[in-house]
Length: 453
Image (cartoon, rainbow, N blue to C red; front, side, top):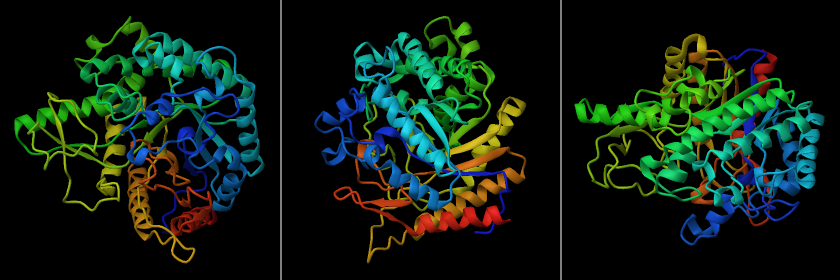
């Protein structure tokens, strides 16, 4: 690939704590909702857990060396909240803070800028026991947590993210139950969205008060395409679009909810929105694939739920997209949708949209080693197509400053355990041997070419 993104464009990779760290009972770490969820029979494919994962807690230096050889200038990871505050409150755990001191110092010594996320879904279990994200108190706890991190790391961390994909924990964690904590509240889960957004706003303020220079959020967005031109499908797709996309971006960027949603939110909503919309330095976009949505049919042959049971009575239904090639996870490969969502964000928010970083993009391709080589050409083709569409959007005036590929390592992929592999580096989960894939070398060459240009 010879597309030129310019000399100042950031190139990185992304991971998250529960998916790679392991060591769930070491260093004073407390239990998270994902530890609890994984222990419940039938929750995770093959009974997998994140107890060991990639053992990054012990092998971080090896992983940083692989990133240095890859040539990335930025590493997006997440702090494990239960490692910093085992009970979700109180002063910081010295051993947990010391681990991230070691990781950050190792990154800086390798010439890689750390870009941490405060929360990537691993809520401390004691907070969940007290009501979790359904309760307003968690927003105060999150602000305290942010202040601890800023005090310790703001002098060495140039980019900060508050929350990763608040939509996912709202929908999959509390509304339909496919992710931790496994609740099935349907539309009664809407307070989870509000409290995550309020926690985000309070964390932005706490980070800045602690000296953090550049703060954003990592929010996932994708085009929602109606299944047909019928009024029913158009209406269903519109509601889904608001729930998945604009419920989480409008409050942050415009200081208001999409029509009809503000009334469903708890607390002094107008006052909260003033906090939620605290201006950001940049906006993180996670993107994988578009979604086709229609009115519910009850036909399992047309529905597409990624194996997650959906409650009955929802007024929309994601539909299969068999007219596109698929990743091994079954997600459609549609590069042009990447450009579409970027242009949609620019059109919807105008000068309210700060510069964008692509904080996640990648695909599950499950090719394994053969004679010591992982020839994952399909991942290379995917990345090539999506990055070309990204460059077209930039040329059309969308201000994108960097791209962080998901993911550095094959890892624990939530409800499907270790069955899906997103990494540029193959991990043998029995031996923990790391094998850079063909896509790793392709991405390294791409970064090198762009720096030379």
